[in-house]
Length: 258
Image (cartoon, rainbow, N blue to C red; front, top):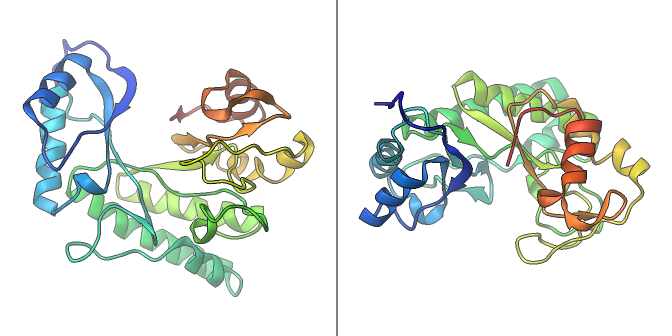
């Protein structure tokens, strides 16, 4: 049960080391009181195990509604895998379908997201780090690749909203990513620090545009990329200029940024 006398949680989301919480992790979460928990491959084995893990985290922090996050996009980014769960298709499947019929592709993307959300809710996961709404460009690193929902702003925004709506239909919060745009990066930001040198006017019309069209979503994840046209010294994740002037300002996003 939630403790009404518990202090407000800290603005941080932690992971844990395995499929169950250790005694040390329980004590740490109890004292640190983080906002939420994020799950990775090594945390996910069976439905029963994940349900127990998410419940034990919420018990430790004393909040029944503590967010539990996961990356469940479909395709190559999916923490819940066979044989216990269906394997959702990559976003490129819906992007390809949209070339023939955008409305039908959006219906399919929304249904797929609803099915993913049901799997997540069943094990206590309430926030999905999806969809990817970056606009890919030729020559960029393949880290986005088939995770993209299309190649143009309008298609990506339409399919992205369909995915968000499907998740929300089943009570899972979407996280649009990677704000303000990862589609031009020529390196994988998990391994290197990419720099995108294009002028602000071009970025605003293309890369930032999908996020502006979905600026009413509840959560967003930043791109760990340097945009010298905005801040030559810091990647977007830790740049007050990018966050305040671009994400909060130009894009108009006022939700949770992670």
